[in-house]
Structures are given as C-alpha cells and as structure tokens.
Image (cartoon, rainbow, N blue to C red; front, side):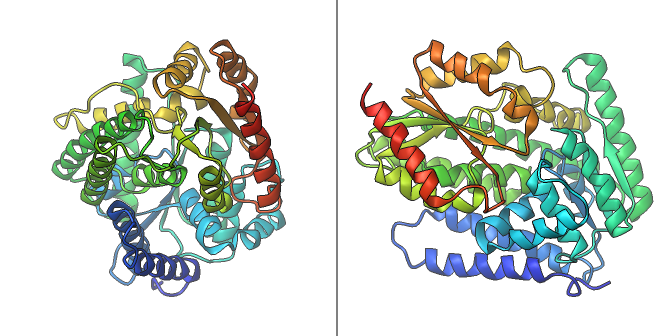
Amino acid sequence: MTGTENSSQIVSLIRTFKMLNRFNRTRSDARQSRILYFDMLTEYYTQIKNAHDAGKMIASHPVFFPAEILYAMDIVPMHTEMTTWMDALFLKEQGELLAKGAELGLAPEICSPHRGVAGMFALQKVPRPDIILWSNLICDNTAKFGELVMQITGSPGYFLDNPFQNSPAEMSYLVGELKDMIHFLEQNTGRKMDYTKLSDIVVRMDHEIELYREISDLRKAVPCPMSIDGYLELLGADYMFPGQPASAKYLTLLRDELKIQVESGRGVISPERFRLMTLFIPPLYLINHLADIYAGLGTVSVVEPMFTRWSEGRLDPSKPLESIALKSFLLPERRSMYGLFGQTAINDITESAEQFKVDGAVYWAFLGCRHTCATIKIIKETLNDVDVPMLTIDCDLVDPTVNSKEDTQSKFQQFIELLEDR
C-alpha cells in the first residue's frame, strides 16, 4: 500500500495548516509559537501521508497512550482522536464520519471522537495503520475502540492495561505491560527498540513537563496572557509530540512569549473583567467562536485543572520504561478522570480557584463522557464552598448538531450577567 491511496483527510489537513500559517505569517500580532505549532501539525500529518512510500509503518493510538515508545522505534504514530478533533476544528467534515460510525451500529451515547475514528477508518479517509494500539486510559470507550478498529482495518493490535493506583506493585505491572508491548511491536514491525533514543526522549519529556508547569504559573498573572484557544495547543503538543524536539521548542517559545506579556502587564483581553476556570473541553467546532465570545465579554479562561496542571514528579532517563510509566501517573487527566475521584482532584480544583483568582467556572458536560459527567455535582458543590459559581453546558466535542453558536453565546451572556450582579 502506498501512502497516497487513502489519505484524503490527511491531505486536506496538511493543506489547511499550510494555508493558516500563510495567513499567520502576514499578521504582525500572530504568536510565533502558534506559527510553529501549525508547522508541527503539517509535519506530523506529512509523515503519516508519506509513511508507506518511505517504507515506514504506521501505528494508530488513542489519547493518553505512550507515543514516546513509537518515536523511539521509528514507527509513525497516528493519534486517532486528535485526527477526528482536527477534522471538526478545521475541516468541518465530522458529520460524514459520525454518520458512518452510526451505520456501524455505534450509538449516540458513545464518545463521538471514537465514533468519528470508526467512520474515518471505515471510509478509508486516512492511510491504513499497520498496527492498532489502545488502552483503558482513560475510559471504557477507549478500552473498547481498538477491537472495532482492528475489525475494520484487519491490522493486528495490542491492548495496554493501565493500573488504577500508583503503588510499587502497580508501577512494576505497568512496566511489564510496556515491555510486552515493545516485544509485540518488534515482532510485528521488524523494528527494534532503541533504548538510547528512548532515554533522550525521556530527557526532553521531563523538560517539557517543567515547561507546562511554568506556563501554568504564568497564567496566574492578572491580566492573563493566554486565551482559550491556546488551551488546545497545549493538549496537542503533549498528545501528538511527546518528547520531540519540536514540542520542546514550541513550549519554550510559548513560555517566553507569555513571560514577556506578564512582565509588560499585557493580557490577552483588555480590560480583563472575569477570570474563568474551564472544566473538560469545549466543543472543538466552536473554539474560534468561543474565543470571540470571551473577548467580547472581557472574559478569559485562566486554568483547566483537569487537563493542564501536571502532578509533581521528575522523569529519570536512566530508567526510561519506568519514566514512561511514571508519566502516565503525572498526567493531569488521571487525577479526575481515571479511577477514584478523590480528595486530590477536589483539592486541585479548589487550589486552582484560589491561585488563579477565578471568578467563575464553566463545565463542558460532554454527553459521551459518562464518567466525567458523574463528577459534575461534586465539583459544583466544591466550588460553591469557595464561592465560585459554575455554569454547566451540555455539549459534544465534535458533533455540530448538539451546540449552536447562538445558544452557546446566550448561555455565556447570562452567566456573565450573573457574575456582574455578584
């Protein structure tokens, strides 16, 4: 199979990223880090498009999967949910993917990015992956979707089992799982693990996590130097480019840009009237519209405790597999979305409200994410205890039929009026 046979979605994404960066380069106010980010996306999907022609193998994988392993083995990673997200954000063709997922029997209650992934492979919008990888991190949708993709593509697959707790026994178990997965990849791709390369990736990943923490701290400044659309860039940098030189360069550049803004007292919104906490992820197809709504209301999203605040800990390049396992326990998403929703997650939310001087919170209640929606009542009560009102908006990440621009703007306007009356 050649990389050009089934790449229509990939080609469209590459064309879109290049077009956006041509526009960005003409703007004097465009962040240089954003330009670099779109260059990274262009290169990422170009690698996927050309992989088979270059004699390389493609491994598809879901969110929160250790793609560092693939980079160390020179296997081309293809992040499936992010590709559906990119389609919703930039191509607006997700309706076709979701309709095909429905034809396959996937109910509307199932996570729409996973329904979109199934449709994407069934419609052959992307190159056929040679390997299917998936895990139970972070939900039952993720745990099951790999089996369906294996059926659709006919490719072999491996399921990575993540333990719930961070104990010595469970850490040892996860390292064993990683070793077994590496053996599976070596057997099915002919590629050998390069542990020296993996150690180098761990060095960069450790540095990147520190940069995430610095960026988070800079967003505590009043006024805040970053807008809500930058939130998705932060997710993409880790989900798609973990431990890669480009992501370290991007995060360093973003950190430096934000530092200059903070030192000069410039915020992304002027004047900054209200500071919001964002819980879960807004509808991706509305993100640019949301940025306009926030700006028009003098509002800024300053923190996303469920996604952008990393736990404390350092990675050790002399123990690369143990470090890859440890990283999975440092993920912000793990505290509130995997296993017990405990006191640590609650403390993180209250500390974020205080440290970031939050006026209100918005919970995007993604209908396909049942385990996170189950925590809404707890989170709302927790924020009430620290006098932070919370707006809950039922939504879908990629399905454009769920949320309209007008309805979303109306709800935001009403919430801002509530904050004004306090």
